[in-house]
Image: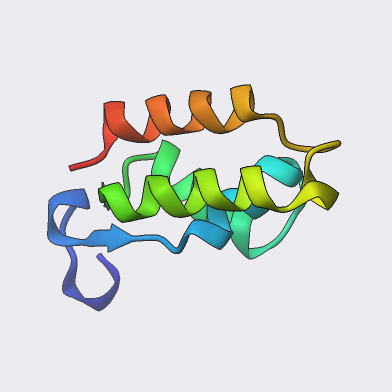
Length: 88
């Protein structure tokens, strides 16, 4: 009940595409990113998503060759499907 929030419906969050990219790079890395995704799994907030978010993730994965050894287009597509299934 921190900040007077009763449940996940009280907090709606739009995450930056870079957080998703960082998560794809290392989902087990301890720290803020892991904490955010753990809170999402625990349904402590409602995730918001937009077409622009998906386009940015796709653009980063496609246009940054130094990331391709770590993040495939298939990973990005699975992430998009997951986001679409849980986000508003």
